[in-house]
Image (cartoon, rainbow, N blue to C red; front, side, top):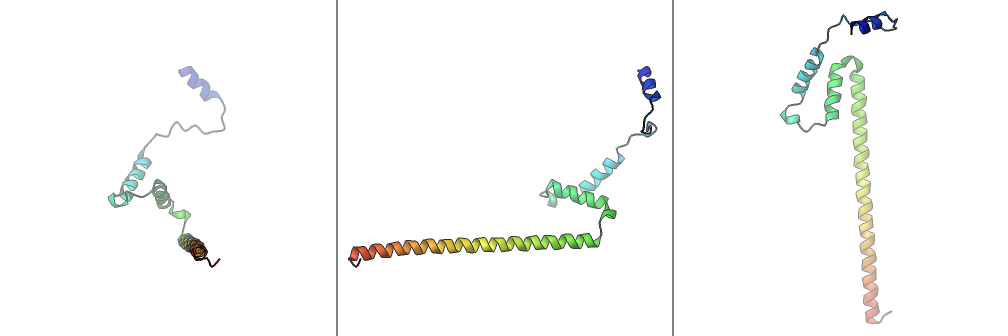
Length: 120
């Protein structure tokens, strides 16, 4: 085993030997603590992607500012407006189709009555 280690250490590598660094799970424990604080009983329905996004943003505060928040809120509002408009248009089309169907049914009934009365 020592022979293999010696052979590996002799080979020239473009990477720095980091054997002097000790392994630690402190950063992971810190993230778990933040996760526990974020995901409380009343937020149990939060999606995993939302939890991940919030943790990411909390840990990388230097990557975003008030302008990014303002732009994100503007986009959310615009998307909500588009969705409401789409739903209203869909409801209106369904109502128009229902009216057209009822009109056709009423026309057929009137035609049948006229036929029975012999006026046709």
